Length: 150
Image (cartoon, rainbow, N blue to C red; front, side, top):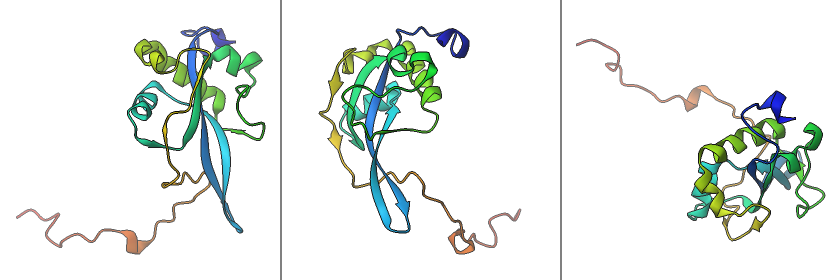
């Protein structure tokens, strides 16, 4: 499995998968969805320090447990309606590399355990399907002399 897609990793390499509450926007409004997504080591270290996060919980596991036969698998304690993030397999491999380069980050969640004591907050909603529409009036007006050589 990992020898083809990630020769530098093994099936037993450590990775953290988070359960995030995100939102989807449609004509009826904004609706919450639960999403499983890998958490890189730098993001985990920031979350542990107490920044507000959309992650309700996170479990420490292995690549093999999350991608048996290269097929995404939900952690056992995640709700069955949980969706996978975009490019779950690719992002799982990438996140595993961050823990391989910073093994001390693995101490935040021991392998095989789940942690839920975050600063969980939905004040800043993560909308998955939002579109940024840039309009002419969004442009910052510059002074007429900004680009002139004086």
